[in-house]
Length: 370
Image (cartoon, rainbow, N blue to C red; front, side, top):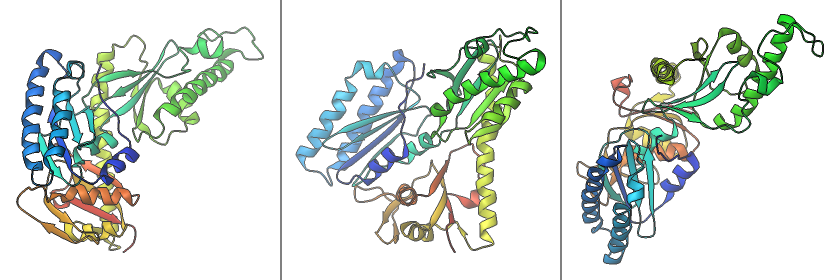
């Protein structure tokens, strides 16, 4: 089982709005408890680096309080026994927050008057998918995580199988039952079964921004699609019954499907960008984007999640860059991204290995109006 913490956009924006002495630490972690000592040492080293930086903007009491929060975390054996692939630690003198992430992150120790949040963005729109394994003999919902694991999701009121939903056997019973018989009756009962499945699955996946992939025969897929109310049901699917299919085989089959779904999303973004260029509603200049984002003019933003550019952005969006990190500066890519989200815009963060045009890096924007 993978231990990870979820974060939704409202919480992300609350973090982005915090001001004061803000310490942001990120590090890759291991899921192997016996190797977690190395992660604890790395956190200790990053904490020391961050608190040294914080001396420029914090008094001794604030430093002491943050150090206490971090030392308590370092000493928490139970916490370190349950890790994922990355860890985010956000600290103020008043509070510490931790985020176990289903993907690896670059080590970072950032101090400013606001949190450094870009490493959390992939958790808002994860490179993952829900997988609904549909068969008459069994139904299961999985999440295919950014770490390429297949994790079963518990779904309240999910029918265990065809019989559980219909009260009938799985055979094409030729005996009349409320005027349902033969092939026609069987299809009516299949629809009843899949309607119950869709009703149970929908509230679990809704609002997640994660695609849903079907693993089922063509017959079951066709009926389920006709009943579906989830906007992100993927066209791509695993074609065939998952009955008696080992979970490891299903996991392997999901890898190219989820990769394609993710790349399709990036490609659609780039296609939209190229279309909007003809209307003067697309731009890849960071300084201009900073101003337009501050005015609420950016509807969609593409950012390089792995690049950092230090500087400041004032209230009107005037960008000032610096080559050196200090407690008086911060990652301006992070700040512009937050301003887009605060105005209701969508952010797509791409990472190394994803095929996005170099000309659109470290950021590009589609505008609401020219």
